[in-house]
Image (cartoon, rainbow over all chains, first blue to last red; front, side, top):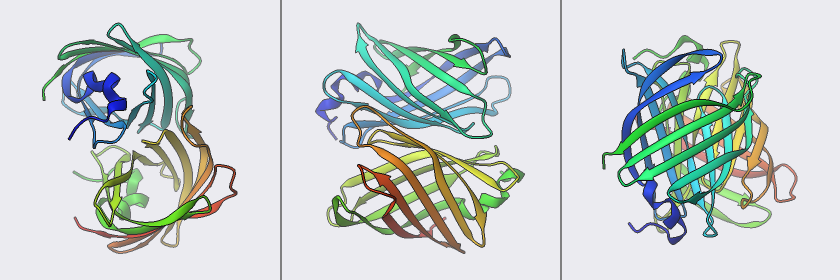
Length: 155
Length: 155
C-alpha cells in the first residue's frame, strides 16, 4: 500500500525498530533498557505507533506507549500519545535537517499518576538508524533530560 | 500469565472482540461499521487496548484508537486514549452492576483537529457479549449520542 502523500515528511519513520536506551532523571536511579518500536500505515494520513521497552537484565516489561503521528502537508507534524502509567500527550513540531523536533502542546495525567508538565522529543535520522532524546518537566523538576536511545530498522 | 490483582474489575474486558456498530451525530450522516478491539495484558496493572473499524460496504479502514486501561484497586478506573484524527482522552469511572461508566476528565485536540469538549462511554457486559455507547460534546454540539456497537469475544 502506498504511503499517503501528506506523510512524505514522516516516511523515514516507517518500519520496525529495535535497539537500546538509557534513562535518567534527578528523582530516579539511571537505568538501561531494550526497545522495540513500530510505525505502520493503512494508506491514511497518519502512522500508527506502538512501542515497548524491557529490562536488559531480566527481560521484564518496563514501559509502553501507543499513538498516532500525523502530517498536515505544510511540514507541521502532530502526535497523539497514550501511556500506561496514566498520561496522554499532544505534541507538535517540524522536521528540519534530518531532525524531527516535537514539543508538547499539552500533557494530561490521570488522578493517580505522577504529574508531568511538559515533554520535548528530538529524533535524528541517519538511514536505518534513529536516535531519540526525550526531556521532560515533571514532579516539580524543570525541563530535564530523561531518555536517550539508538534504534536500528529491522524491517 | 496471571492478570494483575488490581485488574480484577477489568477482567471481563480481556480478549479479542469483533462486531458491528452504528454512528450518528447532528453534523454527519448516520453510518454503520465493523469493529475489532483487543484488550491485552503483560502481568502489569493495566490493559493495552487497540481498536479499529471499517466500512461494512467497502472494507476500507474508518477509525482506530489505542491506549491503556488502569484500575487502582479501589474500584476507580482510569483510561488514556489516542486517536489518529488528532485527539487524546483521559477518562475516569467505575464498574457497577455489569456496567462500566467512564467520563472524560480531559479531551485535548491538535491544532488541525475538530474540537471535542467531552466524551462519555458506557460498556455493558453480558458474558462474551459487550455493548458500548459513546456520547460526546463536540464541534459546538451539547453532549449527544454518537456511537453504539455490540461485540462478541472471539478469543
